[in-house]
Image (cartoon, rainbow over the protein chains, first blue to last red):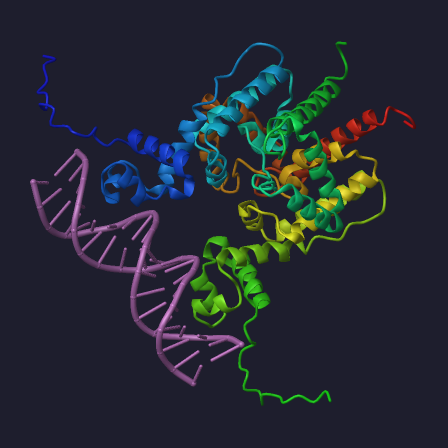
Length: 235
Length: 235
DNA sequence: ACCTGAACACCGTTCAAGT
DNA sequence: ACCTGAACACCGTTCAAGT
């Protein structure tokens, strides 16, 4: 008996589910930033009172946990092609694309204290790629600490250069000369970027290049240690 | 005329100043964590209404800015001894000691969008140590991106192993065997740590070792690139 | 000059009451 | 079973009023 009493299209809104709540949170954060995501605002977004959300999620922490899991789920599955370095590199760059799609995600991830099973699964599969590539358990362990958040596709940026250059050229030159007196070394970087800036619009660092530079320096260092470990047998 | 009209000890409390507000915030965060630091609570701590604080600081962001500056001020000044690697390494480990004194500081630092002049001065002096050691401006720039938050003495930890092992040995063994099925690679790390654990109390990673491992891998990689850059003249 | 009370516009969350 | 109104205990911040 698979006949069901259809509710005669009385459902004007899709019923609230945990998944709908989480996706609404991601949408809202993508549009207005993570600080806009409050329980009250989230309810509003779903055409419901804030209190109704508690029928589908435990609390706000649970929302953020779920959101992180959905985003980690966007990372490509582990590949088995190439050596460990190419495989791990590709996976991390896929994680980075997910983070670029949701620029607020890194701060939410770093605010989680305990890793979720989904996160554990991701980490474990990256670790598995290393072990398959000949890492010892010890070296894989150190690799995780060295990669840090980079394994999830983001790095801790300590400067924000986004609104650095929205000034007139004269004003920029003045600011630069003042900066040079106080911070000569940092200023040298800024000036270098301005010179190379014929190509790039807006100025600022080439974040993708810098991410890959740091990633490759790390992976190359790990590979060197792996080769040292295996007592130079082959090659 | 250095005689002053002393207020006849009517001052039962030291007058509120920006510095006292900031130090009270640090004390409170050290004792109860950063989430305890609200304007209302901070006023309470100083025996004053929250609104009074606004006579000495602009707002809460200003408090956090000031707190970061005080903590960055705890880092040892730049040394001129040894080569660039030893000098930078020593400075970063000094920064790390400051962070260990205030475990909440890293999250406050990463929440600042624009670096303060004090922070810029620190960064600039680290950059200066690299330039003095023979780095090109380009390589110094990449070095900052590679070090990331490590230049300030902390790394982004994605696991929290603090409350991992507060179980009975039997329970631990059971949990481990369940974990092994789901996350074999990660479990291998945990088991390795348990074995080496005769020495260390409490278990968990040796954070200082891992920090230095990652730092040295990075510094060594940078040194290699620096030597490659200078066309192998003096070896 | 500095501190305060009252108020505003927000939070997350609980719980009894509705349908 | 799900949604809601009212309430609680918090936030940061402003501003007129006090001394």
